[in-house]
Structures are given as structure tokens and as C-alpha cells.
Length: 537
Image 1 (tube, rainbow, N blue to C red):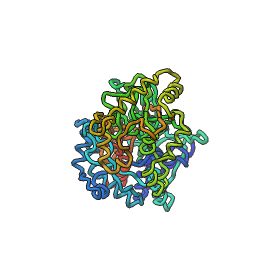
Image 2: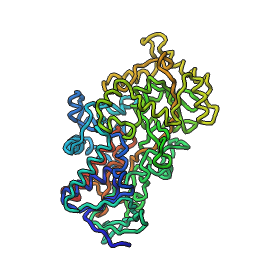
Image 3: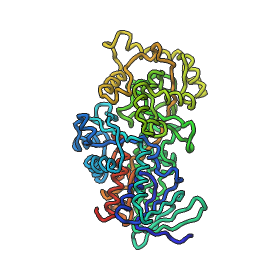
């Protein structure tokens, strides 16, 4: 074992929460060692891949759009939609802290760091019965979360003019150490040479991500009373495996709460060029697509439509007989509505090319449509529904799709338009019309029309699977991001931030997120930890 490396603060995890913690500690004059399992080019964790949406309350963008939002309203929405346990003291406290401070501690702070937001505020997670976001709150970072991560990394390095920062890439922490009843460092393995290092520090901060990068953990924590598909894709970070969570429980008496609550997505498909085993891409499902079961029949009686309740969509998909569903649409819909969440496939926003972004918004994203038609085996096209049915069966190696039944499904939906708009009587159409009342959503949502509309082809079928993403549960923490033991007392010298802490308290989102609460949750918990470490808590 090499000579121990000592610093004031040891941050374990190189995602957004870890980087912000290191940044704020460096600015306070602390020496910091940051340990990251990944390679230098992947420094930034899941934020490098994420789209960059943030649920923020009371922002200038909302004021300009005349959106009447305030913390009290946001908290009502949050607690109702998340079904947050009112006995869960610290999760409730973090929910309240979030809505009261997301404007100043996230939005304003990021603007001061040079981060910009798109002017439009999107309206997501409205709730199936209006019980979600009562107003639009979803703000998008210009440049996606990749720009956010890179700016935070740059700021962190700029905050170290005197060599107080050490970043150890490709190092895996295997255990935490304690001295005199206080966490005092960690053991880490250098994966380049398999040598073990002892890292000493006055304070240790866990920023290791959640549990959902491990399908073993996903299956182990899946609530027994909820259906679970036989097969799922992985949209989480593969290093977010929960090992240090359990180490803290076993060795220091910490508590993992809400481990069975997860923020997964219902419409993923296999990455054409996977970065790791089981890697999936999460689509933003097209509101105008028909969501079908494995037989090609519309899932109902309440149709599945995105933008209202992601948690419910996941449960409905998990209930299906086979672990895949189908989205049935046409080229007209795909050009306007088809999107993949994340930085990788949103080039115009990621690369901050406003002209290209505006062109795609107004004329359709032909580039993404053609790319997926070329690269993804799950993205099927045909000029006829009969031909499409053949392709769908070939992909699944089955005879599940009866061409006549598929055509009957489309005919039944298209019949809504046979007598003019006055006789629409379909809940999916009602939801689409409601979504189109808000300007930013109207730009991304087609006017309702028959699927078998002349000139709108070819038909498209996309095979979808449930894809894991974020853990809503984590280690119990207080409002200073200190890890608490089973009796509710802080474990001396140990902090936890970001997804590892359930984005605050162990699970401040409850069962559902208002969407976009994750990146801000990383920043809020990290800044709270740094304040406490630096003596301002």
C-alpha cells in the first residue's frame, strides 16, 4: 500500500454532486481529494449524458411567461404528487428546502457561473387528474447538462490556484475508515495497477450516485406488490451500484430509506452503440403515437400518453404480458414529436446551435428520424400496416402481431376524425389538445389527425422497454447533508449528497418526481454539505 494521501475533504464520486461539493470546499480554502471510478473523458458522471431539465420555482423565465408560481404552490404539488410520507421528517424538510431555494441556490447561482437557460418553460408531469405540476416549471439548460457539468468542472479547477485539489480517476473506493468514532478516510483501489491506497481526510462526502446502475439492486429493491418486467434496459450510470450505501449501513449504522422507489422510464430502446451492457436510450414518447401491447392492440382503457404521470406509465408497462410494448406512429408525428432524452442525441441544444435548433423546432427533426431509422433495429418503417406487422414479428421472432388486428387498431382511432373535430371522443386526443394549449408544448405536439393520413407515411413502429434511471431513495441525511444513523444522530465526519442521498433526506421526492428535480437536488445537497463542512451550517 502506498503512503496515505491526506486532505481536508475526501469526495467519493465524480458526478455533478461531487464536483459541486469540491468546488464550494475549494473556494472556502479547503484541500480536496476527489475520487472517481471512471476515466478522465467521462468525468462528470450521468450529467454528461443528461438532457439538462430542471424544475425551478419562481424564476425570471416563469415571470416573463406570466406563470404564477411560488414555493407554497410548488410544495403542495410536490407532496401531493409524490405521495410523500408525512411522517418522513427529513424527506419532508428537503422537499420544503428545495422549493424555497431552487431559485436562489440553483438558478441564480448557475447564472452567476455562466450557465444559461432556454427562455421557454415546459409543462411536464401534469398528473393524470391535474394532480402534478399545476404550472410549468421545467427549465432547460442551454447546452444540456453536459454544458453544466463542464462549467462546474472548469470552475472547480479554477478554484484551485495553489494545488489543493487532487483528482484520482479510475479509483474505486472499497471501504471507509474511522478513527476515534469519526469517519477519517477511505481505502481505494487504483484500477490501472490494482494497488490499494489509503486516503485520509477530516471529512468524507459520498457522491456515488444511486442504486439503479445495478440490475441486481433494482430487482432486490423492487416493491413486491408492484409488477416487474422480466427484462429491462439500463439508463443509469453503471457505477451507481449501491455498494458503499450498504457499507455505510453495515459498518456505521446508516439507513437506506425508500430503496424501492425509483424514477424509471417506460419507453426505452437499446442503444445502437452501447457504452455498457444493457445500455438503453430513453425516448420522450410521442404524445400522438398509439401505445400498443405486444399483440399490437392499444393499451387501455385509459390510453398511455406521456407528460402526465411517468410513474403510472412505468407501472402500466410493467403489467404487460411481455417485457416490450410498441409505439405506432408515422413520419409526420416522428418529425415533430420523436425525441431521445439526453445530450447525445440533442445536438442543436448540446452544441448551442440556435439556428439549427429553431429549424428543427419549426420544420421537424429529420436528422434524428433518419439516424434512428438507419441505426436502430427497434425503429421499424413500412409503407403499409401489413408490411409493418411482418417486420414487428420478425424483430420479436414471434407471430404476435396479426396484420388485420393492427389495421383494426388504427381504423378505430382514425374513426374519431371521420365526422369532423366536433365528434372526437378519445382521451388521448383530449390530452393532446390540452397539451397544445401551452405554447412550448404546442411546438412539440402535432395537431390531432388520423394516423393513416395521406402523405404522412411511412408508418413507424418502435419497440419499447422499461428503462431504469434514477433511485428516489438513498442514505438518510439531515439538512446539512450529514449521514444519520438509525437513532437519527449524525455519523461524525460523513456526508452524503445527490442521488446517493435520495436527492435529500433519503427520499424527498417520495414515489414520484415533478421531473427535473434531480440536477437541482444534486446542487442543493452539495452546497448544503459544503456550507456545513466550511463552518457555515
